[in-house]
Image 1 (tube, one colour):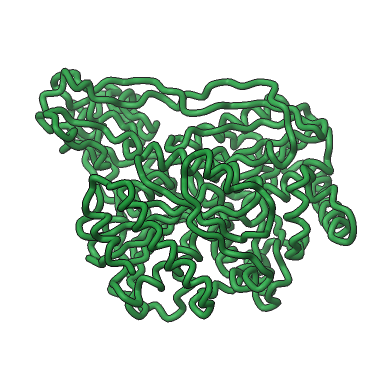
Image 2 (tube, one colour):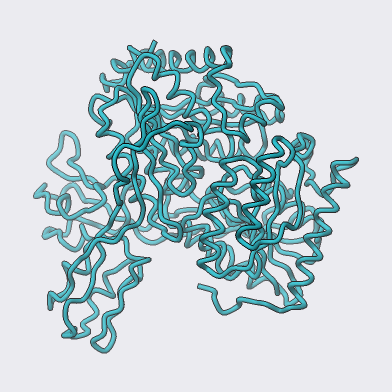
Length: 304
Length: 306
């Protein structure tokens, strides 16, 4: 089993489109793990039928029972996240769920047992069958919920449990470099860094590369949306070069790549010159993955 | 919970790469021609606002964003494991009298310190990021930047929000992170209005739905800018109609826009787009008036926009 992860730092750099095209060209040899749980688009890109759906619970949240609260304010002073305020027109205090970090300090200090724990569903963990013949694991996080890192870990674990020895797990990571990205990178044998050939894309990829270096993940680079400004393309390639990352492929900025998604296709199924270029890129990517299988440079144990 | 005397407009999206930062920067430029404005970069994992302001001058030193993390002051831990049982982040373990603290997982809530019966835990500050202030022309830019490898983006966002509110500008434009989980929620919380930037693609259509639900759960009025109009044919308009959210404007797409986006160029030379965005600000003002929003401050503050 080999796990590859696709990430970019910046949003909209082409992670999901690239990951879907790769998965589509791998066919039944892969499992797609959509780890962008708060903007999950893998199922749209691949065309899929849900086969299993489980509620996801992120752990209990804290609520103040108005009738038990005396309004003493101790919890308000204890909370370091400014999540507790006076309820308007009432003596009682209120926890703003969106700001609450669920540490439980309020419940610990309350002398009147007014802080209660309530478990609420925070999303769904799903398995689906894509119309391309391979399964995918994905999730939907309720808007405003935290612990997306935990849900990402569940998506990855489920994909691992489903994968046979010879399968490739393709992890589509979220934007940024935070908790869910770290959870997506964990256990990956190879990270595909998608560098959008824009100044912001380069800056954001640089922070991702720093993170992946700290996590000791092997990397390979793909420059996407190239050709708008040759100087910026060179800067994108230079970012990879000075970090000792190979440039595996460069994908041209091409509006027809976008158009293809509207017709339930991936980049891999595009006709004409754009399609030929993409298929050449995917071929290079596949050879790189095959090389990885042979080397057997796995990180199976770093699965937290 | 709006910040005093400041009208706060958050720019968010759900999907990444739809044009949040570009639109936030341009709105700040438009407002700056008549009023004081602070652009708050709350995308602390991937901050990019400064890319639009090449001549921005730093004001003072970057401020360290710190949280308080525990440490054991003596080896007399009796291994009662109160701290271990109470910590909901798995950041502290007390076994055999040895306390092990993982400061990377700690959220700095202080619960273990309060709970330790031996009183051997104390706290020290740990830097998790920076909040910096810059000025270009009449625009103040506050940037939150989380340390690479950290996971406490929400604390950095809150620190940047506080710093932005202290600028005492009439307007604050927030550039929010993508997604709909905790970082986006913190960035949106406390603002007066959310502008959601969508592009006409199936991905953006899906993610916009989540962003609108998030705004509704925060009781935050919102409207949608359809950016890159013509780039795809996903029906953003119908989604907005069904969810009863106004489409504020459409900004057309062209190859030149893609080049400008790559270079991080403002749209201030483009009269039509500037006029469009001015109209958006006016539209927001009208929405406040129509709804007769009980919070008198935002509508009063928005009164002066145009």
